[in-house]
Image 1: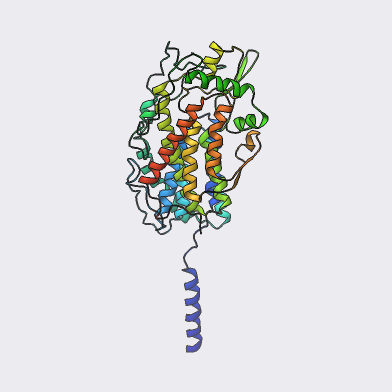
Image 2: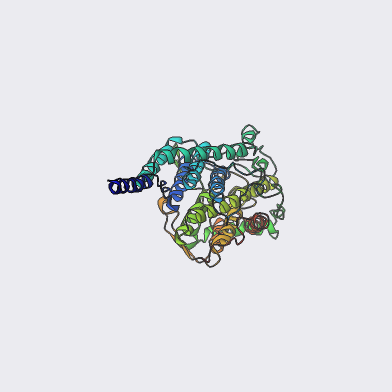
Length: 445
């Protein structure tokens, strides 16, 4: 009898031990983060966000994800105390918290705060939760994780609310000028200049929006031997004589969310990805090609979005300081009234070239993460009807993006060259000031 009782106790102990086994945390994949970032890009296209505003939409959620994940990985460092105005995020105490779920939920909430079409993002969340449930998600794990994700989101939200964005919404429009070298609205929509006060947005790493001021544009002159006249005529001739490859390059890197189509008396918009959205696509491609896990992918997104955000602030600071006339306006007025650029001219001043600045900054960030000589196929524009292009490095892609503005007829060469310089300075400043990990590159595993 004693022996039977002992066997019973041992068996009960085994059963009790099994029932007390802690729940295995639900696996979250890098693909989940890529899916969310792609959904945000789709929404920025749908909601027609301007390129600078889109960069803001990307950066705060990316930092939120990175900060949560970095709390659980000692090889990565918090950006709290490194980025301007950001303090360390609160810690979590509930053992049920799945850090990976919390990191993506913090991204979701922060993204939702920054976009208009919230229903599109809510649909994504519902689909993602179903996938997690298929992987074994419990309600206790979900509730604990989203509670912590919300706590981090509130921390990031408070930080974002202090960046002057809301204040710039009520500032005056960019005034038009009667000076012959100053920007004027361009056809076909003749839109007002967008985001003339973007230089008042708090920078992320830079000391100020005007920390890296490029050389000024050439002095305006219509004398045939002057530098300005020569570069204006270069744009005119390049567009007139563009070959199929140059036209393809121009279209591939167009990234203009404001393209307007005119049919008779009807005008309608063609929705396109922004320059920052294109580089988010490249980030996803690189992370998948390198088989980056969730932490590594988050690192790539965070570093690239910070570079994009500060690059836009620096570039827009110069745009409204120099306030330079676009090639289309001066060529139509003084050279050929029937000339049209390959690309539709975007609605803001010419100097410096935005794509040159931000592409250079983003390419440097990705090179820091994945190394140089990183071959990839850029299929980002396929969903917008354009073929893929291949590159042997991020820097090669950024140089092509910069030159696309000349092929497209929307920028002078100096705006491109000084834009590359400006983007390089932004990237170097981020490299100098911000430490994500002791060895920034994850290229060698």
